Image (cartoon, rainbow, N blue to C red; front, side):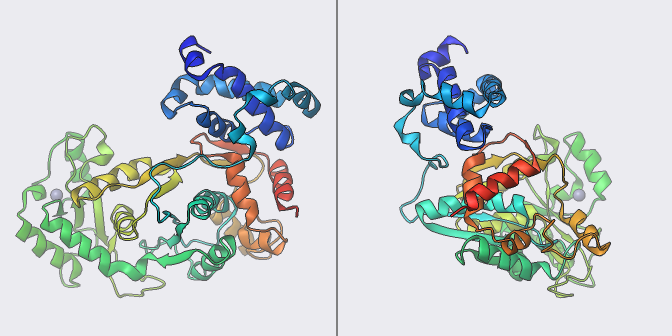
Length: 408
Ligand SMILES: [Zn+2]
């Protein structure tokens, strides 16, 4: 490790080794990068240091994980007194800017089936914080795409959410809030921050690629208000003929940020709302509106939402609101099992599994039936730690750990 960081943090490499040993001893000889890094943050390591030193820290962890549990325990003796006393207990790092009234956080599952282990862990992070600071925890079912909805999933997710949080979760269904999204679409049009685009998707893409505005971008507010009415009207635009776009920055260095769509027409029958609506908000509109209306303070989400977070921040800005604090999580994989609702469903349909609660499935409903307590997910989140690093997990080891967390 280079000198400047060693001066700043007083022997960071030794501390990294110490925390890796401590974490490994607590968890079957295998230290988790996220947990070690969380501990180092309490010692003064900062997020921006990770680019430079992340690799070194992960090498130290790998070295420690190669040792036997006995070797780890022996070596740890010499570290005991050198680590910060604050880290005697496991836990997630403190959040910045926590209001006196507590934090408001959420998870946002889509209704394609019940929740599984990885939903449980991701919920564990946010719910752990809500328990620590007080506040509210939302489970928001994101069903504004009429496609890919399992009508039974609503009830299943609601039950999962209730179990996972001992009844504390507030369950909200987005498709019940369509009128609210329309209000905001109209607000954005009125602020000249959204316009109805009637170009084909391809024509728009070609123009945007060259940082050129399409002709619709210069429509007046009044023209956009008229065109929006035509989107809502069954006798107006047809599906695919018009979308509502956010007026971001057509020269933005990231092409994905250039005038992204906010709403579209889709006349497919919605399993919950039937044929009540023909214009559906896209996630960047509905998520922004909900995070704003629900007064979200902190958001912990998958890192695949990084671009969306930027888009949503742009919408907040136009509406004169401060965007919540955000942290991103890496993805999890079992090296010996694909955790995918689609695959589970196929297995149920082919008779491989008896149902969503089959003991072979890592769904929450199955784990609940097997006697796991929801606390295992809060503990697992603390163990894995807030980190953007992807994690490949061994299913057997993972469940061994879950069993330990489940022990009375
Ligand atoms: Zn256009």
